[in-house]
Length: 262
Image (cartoon, rainbow, N blue to C red):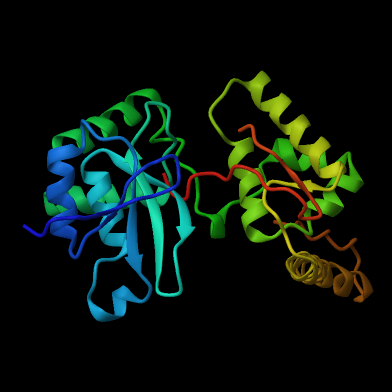
């Protein structure tokens, strides 16, 4: 077995480990999954193209042993790091990772600790509530209604970068009672009204997001406008459009971000 290279990490004094293969990482997890706290894994940029140890390798092995990834960090020009640790009892699941677990099950690669986490998630409803990936995340009805009542918040929401938009949607849909969710929506709308976001955002990102939203809005209105101009005996139908932490105002502060893919 290839031994892990252990280096010092300044982040919460959690170790930085380096593995050459998925098998080596899996062997480490087999021995330490129940006794170790979170660790950081070191990855080489472009490792996938050379057949090296990749983030996907690490994530699949982590899921098999009941662990999950969280923060991502930089190291140097050639390397980056990702934090992995034991899954917490209330940790949400993503649809992406549910699909990965199904693949691992089909291949017979899930381990007892990982299976226990899946059983817990199915028993308490977290599996059924798995959240959609950033590319498919939609604005829930309660948030959309709240934004409609606050033009200022809605306008700022439309300028958010993809990461900030996902951070808002992730928090709104986090586990909690209806009352807790309502308060969460109210708090987020208030934050947006003040021009605050969860992650720092450049003016260029805001401009791109605003332009993209304007283009999508224009595209949805075009069919209705064209229909209203065409001779017809009936009115044209309107087109239908589809945790605590510090916030940042105009990119001045940073905030805790959601886990990458639980």
